[in-house]
Structures are given as structure tokens and as C-alpha cells.
Length: 325
Image (cartoon, rainbow, N blue to C red; front, side, top):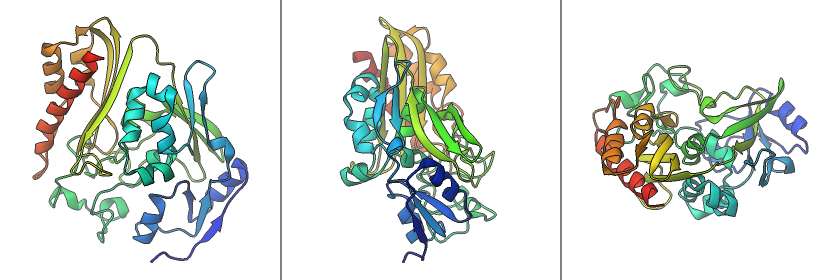
């Protein structure tokens, strides 16, 4: 049962920032994650601040530099179907199309997808775990089939977003507005790893709102893709996934970004896999080397070692698909 809370629907961004800065305030965009968290008592809210009246946070439009600006309230379905995204930023379109179910893609927003809370069954369950202010991560010694291989240290949840790894691979940035004014930062600086703070997922400060996602111009020779493996073919979260962005000159990879999903508490960019690709032809030898490199540094738990081979096979398949484009 939902607890009682006040509901506010500001008509300006300035008013939304003011209301969001109050103690106990929670932002509401599509609500597909927030309402579940409130119902399951993962979070508490004294005031729910709806962003639905803020037209400035909607829309997908060209940026001045030739890139693309996506409002935080753009729905996942809009992102997946947008012709410019499908043509120029394929990884993002593919990632958005794999989020949840059609109903949730029509309701959920891009900003919400980036800011969603962990899906760890201990965090979502009746466990006072480290992320909820407790003293331990129960996944470390418990049922951990779906948990992290990389970057976990104290907390082993995996980042639930599909759009985040694709956007990191594409070099996206975000714009934030809060009591201290606006700021912009690269998306890969937006997420907070457990080693920094096990109780935060993002750098958002009280009262701060994500307003836009900005993609840089794709440039010549860009090829990108996203794929995830999940237990069920509909609406499930990634057991493992990979976002690729490669700048090609003929058959040679001049620059590559490899960002893993479903295996770390943040979208996990893998420099070793990128180095195995850079400056080399995208042939069978290079692909095999990159797939091996992508699992370097993995630290499986008792029940998730299967993800190591899953990642290698997934990266092999996706690089072969990228080579055919």
C-alpha cells in the first residue's frame, strides 16, 4: 500500500527546483520506477513533484553543433522510434527498443531510465542492506546470480539502465539545473560507484533536475550497436549487455568505445577491450582478442561466473554484426 504524500505539479522549472529541494521530496516523470519504490517501501516521500507540465523538458531536436538534444521527459518509445536516432545513433535506438515492455516504454522517460533505482532483489526486498543504510551487502554471500562482475567492491548491484551504456558509448552529456544554477557534464561522470558512496546512484544534488541529454555529432564512419541477454525475451533487465561505438576508416577501427551493461554498478567502460580494437582491422583475430580483453578484471561471485563466458560470446556476436554494417 502506498503511504500518504502531498502532490505538486509545478508549471516552471524554477518552481520544480524549489519544490524538489524540500526534505522528503521525490521527482515524478513517467513514474514507472518511483511508484513501485514507494509501494514497496524502498523509498519514502513526503511530496511527489510531478514534472509533467514542464514542456521545456520534452522533445527531440537538433543541437547547434550538429548533434542532438533529447529532453529528459522524452519517452523511451519516442527515443526508440525517432528517425534521426535510428539513422545516426543506432546504439541508442536499439537500447531504447529493448527497455522493459511496450507499455512501459510508452510511459517511462529517458531521464527516469538514467536515474532509476537499483533492481537488486535485496535492495527491493525486506533487507536493511548497505544501500539502504545498513552494514552489509547481502549479495556478497547470498543469491547473486544477477549481480556484478566489475567495480562493485562494497555493493554488488548492477546498473539497470539499457540507455545509459549506449549513451556513454556515444559520448553523450547531460544538463542539470538546481538551486546553484545549471551545469553540464559527460554522462559517464553522472553515475556514482559504490566505492565513492554506496547509497547514491548519481551526482544529482537535492533540488537538482536532469533536463536534457545531448549527443555530439556522430562524425564520419561511426557504427554503433547495443544488445543485451536476459532471462526472458520481454521486459527483463540485462544479465549482460554491450554497447559499441566504433569510428571506422574502411575496415580499420580508428577509435572504439566498449561499454558493458548488467555486470557493474555503473555503465562499465572497458579500456582493455577498446585498446584491443583501436587501430586494427575488424576481423576475426581482432574480434577474438577484444572479446577476451572485455572480461579482464572480472571478479565473479559464487553464482554469476556464467556471465564471463556470456560476455565474451555477446561481444563476439556484436562485433561481427558491426563489421557487416
